[in-house]
Image 1 (spheres, one colour):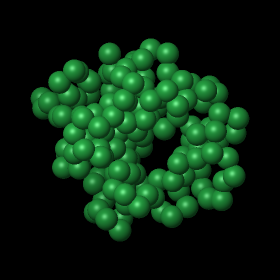
Image 2: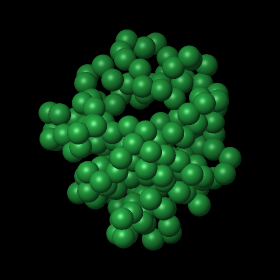
Image 3: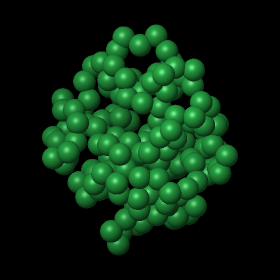
Length: 158
């Protein structure tokens, strides 16, 4: 996968997408609303089984207690966690459809405090609507990507 100004190139296709509302940065920080530049990899695939069929054999179901910790001072920073969690976090099971399907990445896999967390590929709100730093797609395009991506698939963000 290669992120270009026109969209995400993957398997010979150009897929429209949205990125962080602050653009792309080489100096990613927690909460800066920017998509981190670099070479990343797909690390996980999560889906809502009450809303979608399993998109690939390796996909994991999102349950009511699934969270992603975004508290730089917590041991679970930038990791999947389970409720209850008193530290700051995002719920993976949301009321809206944005996280019905998520591809997680290895951004800040070392969990360096403040370098940013939860850089996902997920569904967009609408075309051109900036994200918190993730890369977002129309649902049909995200499903197409999820069915073809595998653990370790590279994502190049320039």
